[in-house]
Length: 215
Ligand code: DC
Image (cartoon, rainbow, N blue to C red; front, side):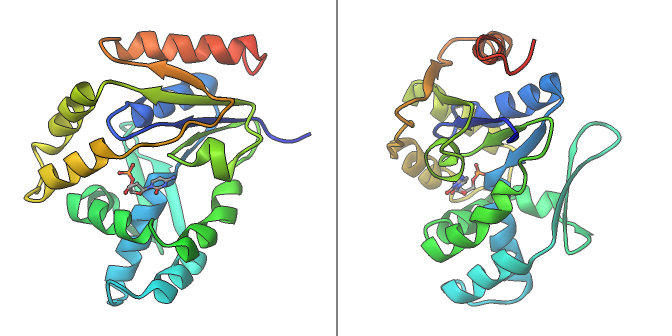
């Protein structure tokens, strides 16, 4: 029997990262943070001193790099690249910009495809990222497309970024906000504008319950 996957897609600032993490914890399922994988590719490229525009080089690294996502004792995330802790670097704004560049290259997206699918292990997987329900797990048992008004997404992203090293943040922010993403045709669109995290989580848990994914 194949492992059930819940795909959580949506634009940045829609809360998909938060909801995915909480959902994985509640269900006791594995979590795939696909954005973190793109970030790690950009970082691996930097560590290997690749040229910023070296598509083949980055695609090669995407295939061979050793990545581990673990949890610290205090519950925080810990990301290892070839055995070294790169959590802080992965979350840096510059890495986000690098990730957005490498994520635009089909060769890198292809190289990460199987890696992402390998995260699907029993008892189930919560897959967070913009193409989870459309491309990586088209047969997902449940597809959620989280949205929020542009204003609310901008506000959330601004709050996430304001304490960081971000000169170019605002530009990146408005680019991301303007982006139009396509929900999978069989996705449930959940609007989180003005709704608490707990209420959004409950709604998603209810949708999964209706599909007998959990009790
Ligand atoms: O969500 P994030 O900031 O960690 O994502 C980093 C970058 O990777 C961002 O530019 C979006 C991109 N990305 C993608 O193209 N496909 C995914 N499945 C996840 C992220």
